[in-house]
Image 1 (cartoon, rainbow, N blue to C red):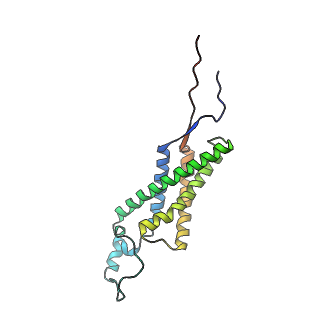
Image 2 (tube, one colour):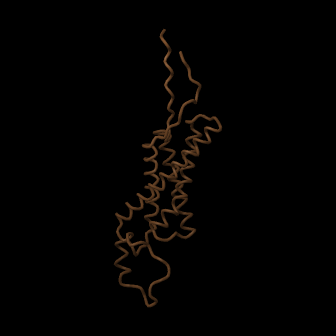
Image 3 (tube, rainbow, N blue to C red):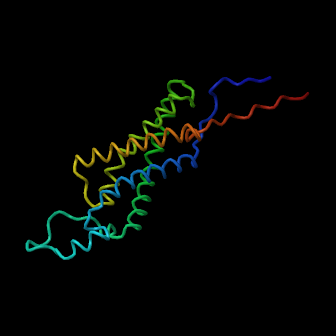
Amino acid sequence: MLTRPRGTGVLALSPGRLALLALLHSAVVTWVLSARVPAGMTPAGRSVTAAAGLGHHGQSAVPGPPPICAEPLPHLVGTAVLAAHVAMVLLVGCVLLVREVLRRRGKPHDSLPVRFGFAALTGVAAVVMTPLVASISLGVLPSFRQFLVDAAVVGRYAFLLALVLTVLIGLPWRLHLPSPAPFPLS
């Protein structure tokens, strides 16, 4: 019987698992940022602020949110699509970083500490993408206090989602073992 040394093979990226993780991270960011849409831009708030107009000082120097914020469904879909693209790029970076660290240290590619570390790293990636997506979808960066609150919520939920997903369906890479060379029959 042929035996292969443990851990030899090629770690291949699993795009389906990675896409699922990116979509869930984008849903978390979209959910948290949807609470930051100014009240004047929601359908209920437009009726209250429409009568106020611009005031006697004219337009302010602070840019407001983009006009798409006035329509909740397109705004949420657009924010989710933007967040999914950013999440996919950051998650591929996380996968490459974890795989390189595992390769250099000669550690097994699938263990509980690896899953926990990968989930923590993806939580950090979700925190990093929060201000980027917020600045584009809301038009302005939130205050530092709001950023810390939003980042803590996004990081917590993204970490928990990544941990549950890696436990249930595995890490977004798999080990492909090379097929053994056939024995000559003669």
